[in-house]
Image (cartoon, rainbow, N blue to C red; front, side):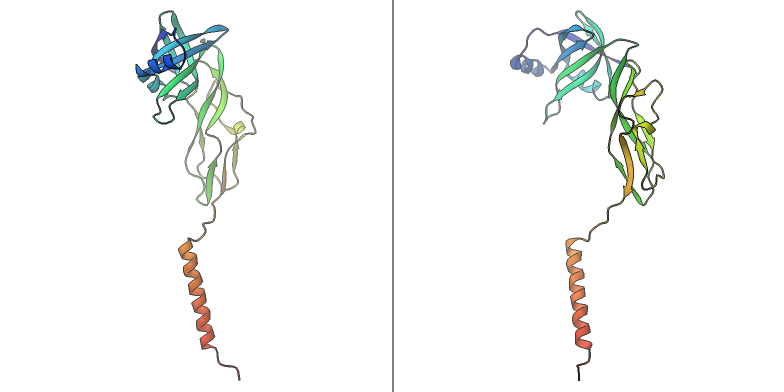
Length: 209
C-alpha cells in the first residue's frame, strides 16, 4: 500500500467556533492518537484529505512542524448534506505492527440464473501489517446454486491478512428468487375476465325442465 503525504499543522484553538473557522479556510480539524502519546490536534488541507479518503484504509504520512508520522483514518465525520469532511480521527501506526481494519468484500461472476445473490456483509474485519493492508477480498460466485452459503471462514484472504471476525459469520448466500405478485391492474383484469367467463357459461347452460 502506497503512502499519501499530507501536510499537517499544529492546532491550538478548539471549540465549535474555531472548527468552523478552520473549515471556512478549506481545512479539516484532526486528532492523532495511539501508542500512548498525548493526542495531537492538527489542521489538514481539506481537498487532500477528501481525495485520500476515497481509498479504504489509506495510509497517510503526516508531515509538518513537529510531526512526521504514519497514520490510519479511524473516524471520519462528514457534512450530512454536502459530504465534505468535518473532522478526522487518525490512529498512529508504526511499520511492522499489526492493526485490525475492515476491508471490502466484493463478488465476481453471476450465480445460477434461478437463484438470487443475497450479500449480507460488504466488509470484513482482518488483522494485517499496518503498511501492507489489503485493498479487499473477492468471492467468485459464478454458477453458485440455490442454498449455497459463504461464511467468513470460506474467504480466501490475501497473504499476510488474518481473519478476526467470527468464522461462522455469513457473508453471502444464494436464495430463491421472490415470486412476483401480479400488478393491481393485472389482478383486476383477471377478475373481470373470470367473471365474464362465468356469466357466459351461465347464459349458455340449458334451462332446467
